[in-house]
Amino acid sequence: MRANPGRKELLAVGIQAGLGKAKCCGIMDETEACIMEELGIYLM
Image (cartoon, rainbow, N blue to C red; front, side, top):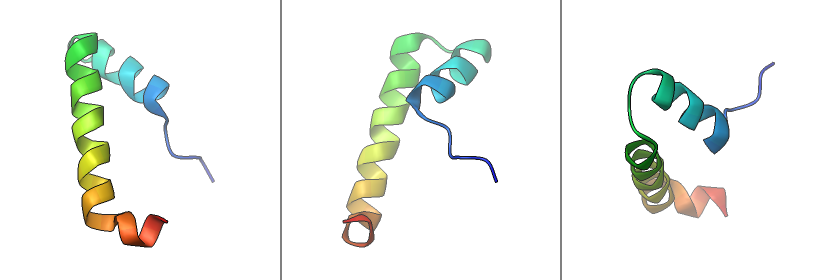
């Protein structure tokens, strides 16, 4: 079984897809905030 990708791996994929580093980091931050808002009670 493979582990979930971390920020480093996601950043590498985003850059390879043609997105800038700042854009990738912004998307990761927004995604993390959304997950914590929607699923935070289950992740604590």
